[in-house]
Every structure is written in structure tokens, then in C-alpha cells.
Length: 338
Image (cartoon, rainbow, N blue to C red; front, side, top):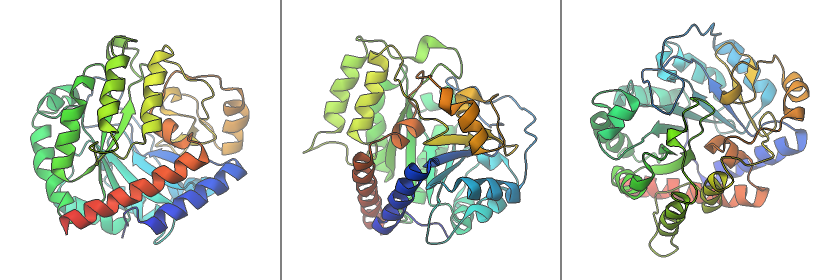
């Protein structure tokens, strides 16, 4: 069965991350088991049905063992689209040790029954997307009734006291004025909250990018409230350093240099081949050495600063501090529900 981020698990993740930094292996990989999705989100390039040429659990296990990451995000598209998702998770799960398995989902296909089965298979964290604190989320995801589903499902899952529910909010120009309402919603649900940030590399749509300084000044003020030491948002697991760098990305004109994709993180496609990140989906390689030589070594892109990049590129000290804080937040969620 999957386990939440305890202090011991956080220590294991940190140890594996430190080892991989030395060995030149990724800290985290996103295993995109399908590029099909039940949603057609306005800020994403997934949605229309595509041919995945997907491989099976044994091949994913072989690829992930070769990469030996600290964390595996099982994602898509919508990973619950796969009929064999439980077999994939079982193939990757290593009880009591890394990799830490997180399922990234819009939760449209998630039920309480599936939640229990996914935990039994080895999922330790459910990362569920939320763009708005009400039914505007339905319109943004183009799934009618999705927010009402989440509003029932997430508190029910959180009530089991496993501390394993994380809500992921991608900051866009459309939703950033409502971040405090999202924080309040997630706190009411009894979950944790992680922030990411929008990139137009997926959609070529500039509408959802924040404008500097019109929006970034306001976002700094929101950060002051969220990370206030005395009465800030206790459900937020994103570190303040990461959040402030999200803002810096837009202050720099949608650019942050020295992206370490292919080194700190990468994507495994449904067909089992490696891609440096989801923005370069057509760049596919058979081995980490090939990806490093043909892409990562020459990469000078800085056109996104999404969560997986931001969190794997932290200095080691910040990685340790944030991992411990996340473990404490998970324990607090467990205590509050039990």
C-alpha cells in the first residue's frame, strides 16, 4: 500500500535525490501513461483522442528502474483512462522505499472505490487539478459537473486521514485573482495545495500569461498573505521561494534560464521513450545517455517554469527544508481527520 510523506519517507526522497544529483540522474520523472484525456482544458494541449502506441507495465518498470528517480508522477492526459493503471502502479511500487508514487489526475473518473484500490496498489499521493473555487472550473476543463464531483469526493477521501490528497492549481491570468478563495476551498476540503504556473509553450495562447507589472505586483501581494508567518495559508505545500520564482518568471518576460530538463526531471511517454519535458513531446530518445547528449547538454530553453521544474531545480538546502515541511503538513492532515 502507498504511504504518505512521513519524515522517514521525506528523508528517503532527499537521500535518493542527493544521490541522483551526484550521478546525473533525474530526481523526478513524469510517467505519462496516456496522452488521451477526459478533459479539454483551455490551458493544455491534451484532450482530443490520439493514438498512444502505449507499452505495458513491464516496460514502464524497466524504464523507471533504469532512471531510479526519487519521485514518479503517474500522469497523462488522464492516467485513469488506462484500463491497466493498477497493474502499472503495482509494477512500479517498492513498499517502504522510493520511488514515491503520485497520481496526477483531473479526478473525473475517480471514485472512493478507485481511491482505495489505487492506494492498495501503491499510490502515496493523489494530485488533483483545480483551476477555480467553484463551477467555473467546469467551464475551464470543459467537464460539466466536475467541481461538484470534487466538492463531494475530496473531503470524503481526506476524511480517511491518510494525508495523501494534494490539489494542484496552475496559476493563470484567468484564476490568479481567486487564489485566496482556492486556498480556502482546499483548506475546507482538508487537503494540501500545490501551485504551478502556466506556459504558452503547450498551446501558443498568450491570453493566460500574467502581465508584468500589472499582474505580478498583485501576485506578490497575494504571496505576502499566503506565506505570512503568523496567519498564512497553512494548507499550502509550495515553498515561498518557488512561488516567488514563479512571479520572477513573468517579471523576466516569461523566461528563466538554465533549465535542467533531462537532468533533474524528464518525461516518459506512453510508448516508453524519453522526452526532456512535455513542451518537447516530439523529441524522443531511448536512453538517458542519448537524451543527455542530443538534447540536455545543448538545451538553452527557459520558456516555462512549471512545478516539476521549479521543485527539482531547488538548491539542496531548500529541497530538504520544503520536504520536511511537506511531511509535517501531511501529518497535520492525518491528525486533523483521525
